[in-house]
Amino acid sequence: MTELRFTKGHGTGNDFVLVADPDGDVVLAPSDVARLCDRRFGIGADGLLRAVRVAAEPLAGDADAEWFMDYRNADGSVAEMCGNGIRVFTAFLLAEGLAEIPAGGSLPIATRGGIVTVQRTATGFAADLGGWTFGADDVAVRIAGVDVVRPGLAVDVPNPHVVVALGDDAELAAADLSTGPVLDPPPVAGANVELVRPEDPLVEDGIGRIRMRVHERGSGETLSCGTGAVAAALATRYWAGPSAPDDWRVTVPGGVLGVRVFRAEDGEHVSLSGPAELVYTGVTEL
Image 1 (cartoon, rainbow, N blue to C red):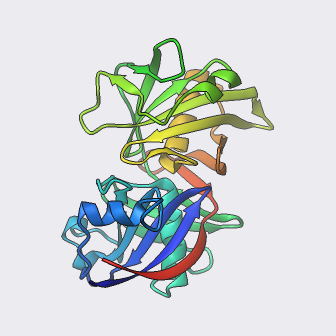
Image 2 (image 1 turned 90 degrees about the vertical axis):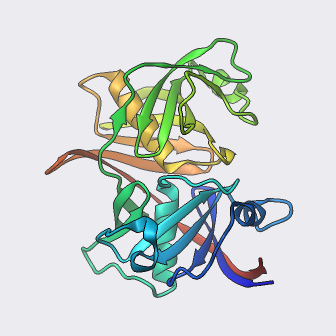
């Protein structure tokens, strides 16, 4: 048996097992990740974050960053990025003394979805997720507990998402996300599905407001999904038209996240902000 030191952390209830592996020595099979994330027989988490130096990780290529975030879903499958995870990952690097963010500075982190730049905020961290793309066609979404098939808007940020607007709070509460929504046509790589209910009023003090539940591919329903919150805000902003705000407040079962669209040299970017908490550190065996 091999001992594995880990830290448990979460961002608005989206929880992770974090492992420091600077030199790329730790080999985690999908079955290892699934066992560690199992809530009955393991540590319990929505996913696993492995911190490895870019120089020791072939998947990172020649990324202009020191650290690569290797993110795995709870079932052991890989994902491009994780919006809540990148904040918790940053908090972990700082706590372990593996990185620092100077006053007014930022920290670039390599992911399968590209470089993500993270800054400190008064309440946690904000991550620049770069640009996004909308799907060309609507996706038909069948959700257990919701009587009518609904159209969904595909959004890549860079994880694939399908966002569905629901009519009222009762419909949002009735949706059964213990099983994954059925998508037609099914995305080749799967997709997270966000169910969105606009607040009334939608915009208050210049900030858009929505509520959201999510089913994550490879993890099931989670208390929060960072890139899902971004996708939900972008979809609602698109539906609301040209007068829609750039700042959004997304309420998820695990808390509140901030989404902001801003202009950069290469076009519009979107950032995600929110808390990141490290809960405890322990040792387990593989």
